[in-house]
Image 1: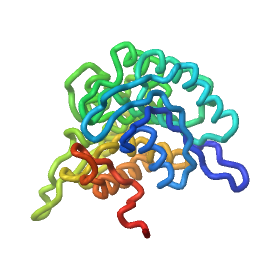
Image 2: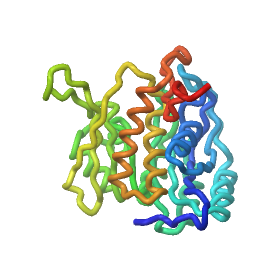
Image 3: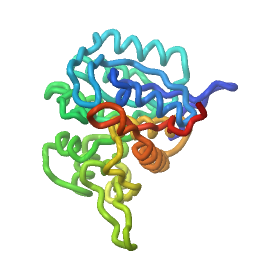
Length: 285
């Protein structure tokens, strides 16, 4: 699958459909930073406004579904969007609007779906009705689905693990799945003394569901990781917009997300600090 290329000197474009984070760590804030890091112009359709910080999500206000749809239409009728990332949906009505927006796209526009069900601080972000829309109308349009272990088990309604869980996710209709390893798939590699712990993502496609590929990266358990899932899916979408295939994009997403966590700002706030995909600590001041 090759997304449309921008004409002339226009940059690659990606569209994030997701919620805001007033603390700047996750959601649209993380997506736009990840797009910029990948050399892609970032556009957005905000699905919800949240009041949150590193400790908790204090309030969520879904955006009117018609406005969500209007945002997507405004961008896509004016720019050549090379890929779309779908994150927080905030409820069934917004999810229905997003599903409608995806149906209006050309079939060859890659879509990355990050099923945001619970915030990193533990707040529920999508109710049962919204999950049904996600499963029945949005995931089947996904070029790549990127759940973590907890999200994957919720989506398939089972406590399975590893390849078995991956097969169940592929049965939902996504073209490919990256089961991200930050919530339990990682392991310590004992091949050398003092070997670092790793994150292990599992990748497979609907065309070859039995061919499970491990994508490994360094685990930074003591680093700031707020926004890591959003960053991972946004990098993956940006790489698809630039013409990578799903596996190459997933490898790039794992590598860059690992760096973003390693460079994260644990000193910001009293909870889980935000990742730093731009590595601002080392920018000239």
